[in-house]
Length: 105
Image (tube, rainbow, N blue to C red; front, top):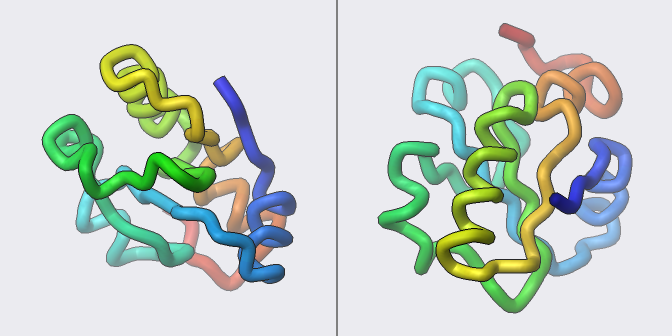
């Protein structure tokens, strides 16, 4: 599985690189903090695969990285997607390394 660090993602966002960010957390988690992108709950991903770009890199994240890793594995196995990256450490790592103003939970 391909991974991307919070610092690498921030560089790509800051340089306006064409990427898609998918947040697979639940609504109450997104209400606490978010880094933007499209929310597709983990429970809905397989039914909303058409919302996930296949022509550009897609960074998938959750709280700490386990759910997003599971989502990526499922998408790679079922749909053969090869443009997915797991955000190392999830939004917790993003808060630690990029934006300490985010509320951690």
